Length: 577
Image (tube, rainbow, N blue to C red; front, side, top):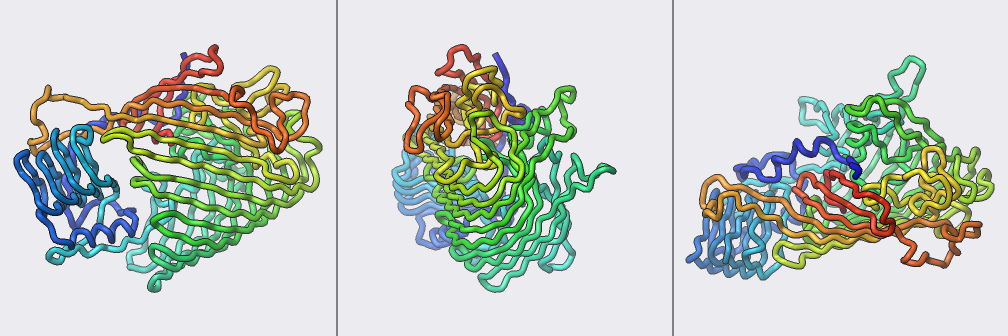
């Protein structure tokens, strides 16, 4: 029996699974909103339509009540035991559906959650946005407050900043520049940031130094990076964006398996770094289109210098006597890289989706020179130093499907790797190993001999156990059901002013995946032709079960394809996918 700990202090957050609802003021809903603009405008439009019921604060539709027409509630909660012959709109409010409740129409919630779907009927579409809506009221009209939205680096857990007192557009930023890791410690952006808005056009300029707590402050080191960026964006919900940037940063070879929070907390707390890292220094220009409702597409061109980075010895909360996994010695070289990226996102909720698709895809054409080849297993590639022209692709497609009032069947397919040209540089290789891919198998378990379908090492382990696969394929499926707690023995507790919300779900899942090498080789278990696909019987498989409490999950996983592997237990701070 083994424990694979991916999260940080997960048990301390268990109280969030069943917690008292928080009252919200309609005009001051709390933290900065990241609600999609299209959703905010839809709410304002729907609220202005004729209604059979408008409520403010705690509102109840009793079992004998029938609402003819639409029902809207601001700053609820809304408790429904009766029937609504129309749409239900909850703004900065939770919706509690009691047994026998019926909504003959859509259910749209912003700034709240829904409970009781298992014992109620909703004939229309259900959409839940957890982000609150910022607005003011003029009679029966909502005036939406436009809130400037930043990129992912403005998340609450990654940013502290000091703004100027004037309402100007400049500010001093002190923010995390990435996840905590064994090469940098914590990378930190420090520098000015400028924002300018003219109508529907926004200009952003950043000039950051990147300090690394693991190496920048030593007397024998001047390891300071930089991030210089200029971007123009035209359009509100749809439009164009273009920009240029110069960078000197530490990048991950692959980061698709876990969330950034989980990567960083695993390293900071438990000295377990699941990333392979390398230095990336250069400049890039890009042009893209976006539609906040469905996704975006970008094409970029960059000139970069890649270099290996060695492990430092940053501090960790636990296991300080254990050594860090050695960071693999990757290639040193210079490359021109042309990349096309596309993203489609139709999920109803970014954090806990019930329906929709999320698809990320990219194709990369690289041309350059490898000056010093990194360390790899003998059969991974031939003579590596010299000219390298390659084409690589990557796809991550996820489908979320509501199959019952409180049940989901979700699917994920990940595939990527070499598409043509010379063998891939080590910085562009892939793997299928670890808690985010095949959690039934230990992360990059060393092998004494033979072939490893997780990392594609042939003939023995390589220092640092890097990702060496030319291609990978991974399929994941999960069924999620509502886990209910009857803490009051069947009493009609929802009628009280203080009620409890249960976010827990049970999850059953299965995974199948492997990597392989393209081309000739002595070990036919690992080498396949450019047009060949490994037999499904050669894939690693596992199955698991667990509890997802919304803020964290606890899972037990057993390898199926290798019966000798013991059960693994793990915590997650995000949904599996």
